[in-house]
Structures are given as structure tokens and as C-alpha cells.
Length: 89
Image (cartoon, rainbow, N blue to C red; front, top):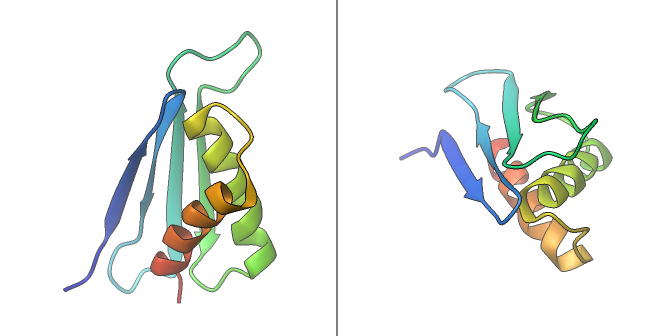
């Protein structure tokens, strides 16, 4: 069995991580429910399946903030990072 997509939903928005079988990239989408003026409602990242830890951590931080609506603690961000790592490799 292989997980190909996971969805997140928080108070501020929702997000998805997906990677098709044998694809060299992961696609991460984030959607804000009620964006503030000047905010980007929809954001997409295409990361290499072999992206480095720092690059994945940067995406995890922003995905967490956009989904939860607040800047999370390291533990909050690490939950998103673990999911990104699940799709890497």
C-alpha cells in the first residue's frame, strides 16, 4: 500500500500533499478560507521528492501557518514536516 495524497484542515485554511507513483516531485497546495487583503488565497509548491531538510522545513512552516492561522511551535511545524517526509524519497 502506498499513500499518494493527504489533506489537512485547520481553522484558517486547508492543504494537501500529493505525489503520484514514481513522480520525481511532490505537490503541496494551501488554500486560505478568509484571506486578508493582499494575502495569497491559493499557494502551490512543487518540491523535488529528494528536497533537502531545510527546504521541506520552510514549506512545513508556511503550510502550518496557513492551515492553522497562527505561527506554530516547533512541535506544530514538525507534524507537517513529518508528513512532507512521508512523501519524499
